[in-house]
Every structure is written in structure tokens, then in C-alpha cells.
Image (cartoon, rainbow, N blue to C red):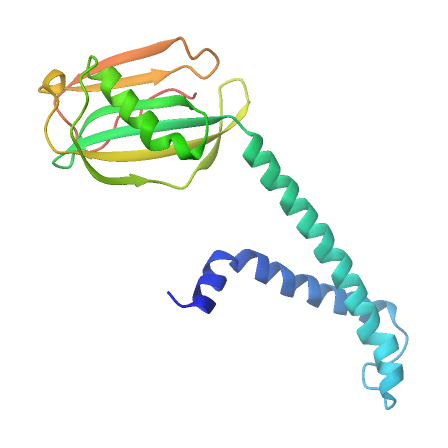
Length: 198
């Protein structure tokens, strides 16, 4: 991906909002300005049109950047939870929902620990390729927000304690000591999705 394409795909919303703010500022200046848009004297055009448009646009962009930074701070301060899924030959063997996560850098290590714990203490043999997903904001049953991370781990061999069952743990977000444990017969091609809200 080239630089311009990366800038566009990663900042599409910000760029579109900037152009929208500029257009709105220009329109606002036009509605509140008595002088015609086409004026003969360059100085008059600058004073009546360019200067107010740039000033208003700068103010609006500064407000937008401040709001965006505050939203990012809010997201970063939210509690983090991890959904970890372990697959063997495309079928789900182990899943754990809503495990407490300290930080994004702990995702892989926590997933390994969860897998071993659900597999009765035996470490899982898995591929070095893991598939983390982008975090999303979710709500608990009591209305508290948290950032939900998810990871899929491909196993190299079927764990001894999961030969016939799909093991699912659902951690209660209000009390992480409460864990609902399920053993589902067989290994589905989609992970267990009827789990309750965190």
C-alpha cells in the first residue's frame, strides 16, 4: 500500500470532516458577509472572505482535534476484555469470553494462559500465526463500557482434554471470579455466540 492510499484509508473520516468544516466555514462567511464573492480588489477579497474562512476553519478543526483526543483518552482508559478462541483444522475447540486484560501487549500471553487453564493445565501446541482483531467498544449488562479484544489461535494438535467437546468459559464482567463453564459436544465451525452480555 502506497503512502497516499494509507493516509486516505487510515484517516478518511478526519479528511472528509476537515473538508466539510472548510466548506461550512466558507458558507457561513458567505451568509454573514455583505461583500460579493467576486470583488475586484484582492485585499478586499482576502479581508472579506479568506481571512474569516481560515480563522473559523482553524477554530473548528482545533475543537474537532480536542474532541477526538478526548474520545481517544476515554477509549484508552476503558477496562479491557479479551475473547480468546482456539481452533483445530478450522473448527473451534476452546473459547473464553470477557477475560480481564491488562493491556494490548498482553493479548498473546493471556490467550496462552487461558488455553492452558481450560485444558486442565496442559500447554497447547499452536501455530505462531495468531489472528487478533481490532478492538470494539461494548457494554456490560449494568451499562458500563469496555474495550473488547479478540484473538484466534490455530492449534497444531487437538488438546487431550478437548478430544470430543468444545469448551467454553464465560467470565462475568461484574465479578471476574464468576465463570460460567460449558462443554458442548463436537467441534463447531463457528464459535459459541449465545453468550450473555459481559
